[in-house]
Every structure is written in structure tokens, then in C-alpha cells.
Image (cartoon, rainbow, N blue to C red; front, side, top):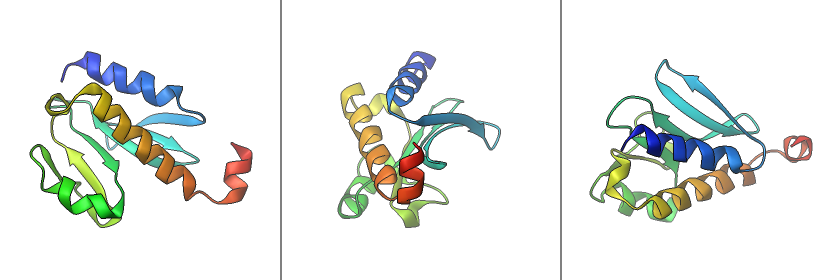
Length: 115
């Protein structure tokens, strides 16, 4: 994955309604909605990306080539794609969009109204 792919991810995430971004932990670009993170991209090679997946897909995806349970947040059904070059851009953006939708759906109504 090149920085171009990171730029593509950033552009896509920022195109989603009410998304904010910031760098956390010194090296991770985090995308959030309503203060809740839905995707994390490492800013150093191999540019891994973490995102939430549906409970029923977590185990299968975690065991797929190139994926693993995401450190620290696997219990919340997050996976880490160790290198985004392992899947198509279309597939990656679909995972990110689904993570965004799942996190957004769990936000309190008051926060959703403010967005």
C-alpha cells in the first residue's frame, strides 16, 4: 500500500457525513463519527487498517489471509487488515463504509441529532 492508498482512504472517509479525523497514539490516523472511531490506518508501512465487522463475520474474517483480530479491540469485533494491498480498493472501502454504518447506528439519539 502506498501513501496514495492512505490518501484514497482519507478522501473516502472524509466524504462520509459528519466524519472527523485525527492522529492518535503518535502514528495512527483515526476516523470517527460522533466521537466514536470507525477506522484506524497506520501511517507507517505496511499501512495496516483496522475496522469493525459484523459479529457473525468476525471469526471467519479474522482467520482469512492478511487479516487478524485487531489488537486491543478484537473483543468488540474489530479486525486488522495487515496490508491493504491484499484486497481490492472497492472491497476495502466497502468494509470501511460498513464499519462507519455500524458505529453510527449505535450512537445515542442525542448525538445523531447534533450531527
